[in-house]
Image 1 (cartoon, one colour):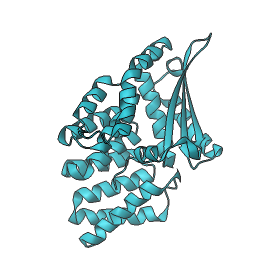
Image 2 (cartoon, one colour; image 1 turned 180 degrees about the vertical axis):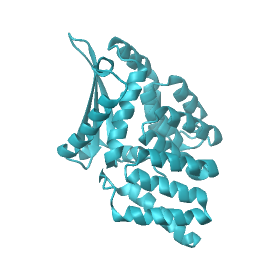
Image 3 (cartoon, helix red, strand yellow; image 1 turned 90 degrees about the vertical axis):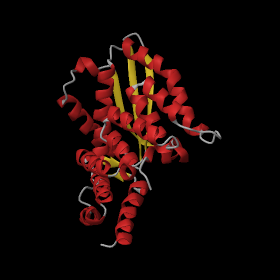
Length: 274
C-alpha cells in the first residue's frame, strides 16, 4: 500500500468516527477491511498504523484493545497519537489517565484546543480542581478567541466545591463516583459510537441527597438505552462496589433530542482528530 493510499484509508476511518452515530455493529464488514489496511500501514508508518487499528477497535466497542493500540502508537510518535490516545482513554472510562495525558499535551503545546476541551470534560468527572486550574493556565489564548471553549472550565472550577459537598452529604466517596462514572461510560461505549451529553442534578429530599445523572445519547431509541443500561447494571453488580456505596447515584441513559446538543458541543464531544 502506497503512502497516499495509506493516508486515504486512515482518513476513511476518521471520517467514519466523526460522522457515525448509533449502536455498534462489531461485525460490520468494513471493520475487517480497515484492520487489514491498518496492519499494512504499520509497515510504512507504524504509529499511524497502530492508531488506525485503535480507532477501528473503538468503533467495534473493543475499548481495552483500542487503548492498548493507541498506547503503542503514542510510544512510537506522540505527535500522531497524543490527542486520540487521550480520547480513547476517556472512552474507556480511564478519566484520571486521560487528565494526566492532556496536561502533558498542554505543556508541550500551549495552543492545543483538543487537550483543553478533553481536560474540561474529564476533570468534571474526576473533580480535580488542581489539574483543571493547571490546564487552563497552560492554555494560551492571547486574542481571547476561545471564550466559549474555556467558559465551561471556569464554571466547573466554581462548582467543584459544591459538588464535593454534595457527594459528602450523600455519603458518596469520590472513588465511588469515579467508579460508577467509569462503569457507565464503558457500558455506553461498548455498545454505542456517537454524540452524547451528560447532566448531573443534585436532588435533596427527606431521605437524603441523591445524584441524578442523565446521559443523553444521540440517534438511539429507548430500547437501545435499555440495552446500554442493562450492560451498566450488570457491570455495576459485578464490580467491587457494594449497593450501599452507590445507592444514592441514579444513572439514566436517555435518547438525545436534536435540540439538546449545539453544534459546538457536537464537535467537542466527538473528540477524535480529523
